[in-house]
Amino acid sequence: MKRDKIKLISAMTILGTISIVRRNIPYASSVVSLVRGLIGCLFLLLLRLVQKKPMNLPNIRKNFFLLFVSGALLGINWIVLFEAYLVHDSLIERIA
Image (tube, rainbow, N blue to C red; front, side, top):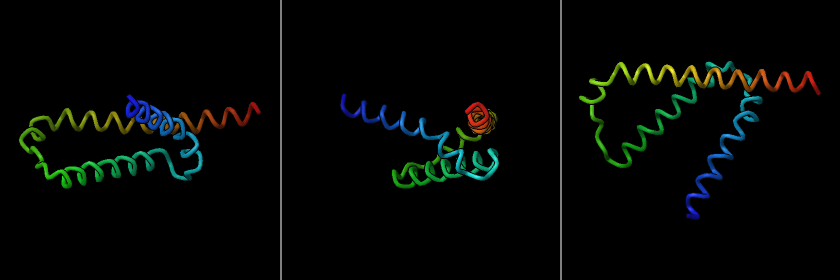
């Protein structure tokens, strides 16, 4: 139970600080999304190596189209999210 609360608090803290972090990054949302995706990919590959679990290449090949489309949609989602944070912050600055 305590571990679940820690996970929830951690997730909420990370999600709650995305706007603050994004506001202070001077790069375009597409670049931030690409770097975020690359870091996530490297982390997952490193995790596979540490756990010594082999990649299931036949399943990856079989589901390549679905994996590609879902990855592209996730990237678009991040770009739109980061742009929304920038627009939202600009609107708040105009009102204040």
